[in-house]
Length: 75
Picture (spheres, rainbow, N blue to C red):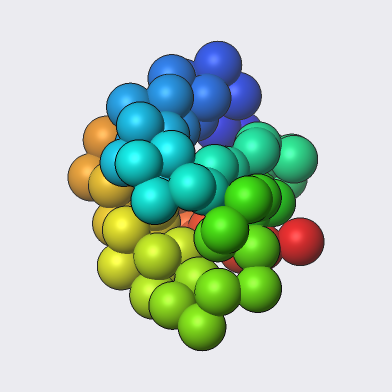
């Protein structure tokens, strides 16, 4: 299982970029199958580009620092 503290640490690196556009991300859960559940907040919530932000941004960065990560999903 992934280290929740490590996931949070990486999210904290991403967070300033999201906050510059009025958004944010909250870590909801790190599942036993190495899937990370997050909640997009602020202007990210409901944004048409949210899926791209999630997959091309958040997931890509997390996977580069945590190779065992399977997927990042929004809940």
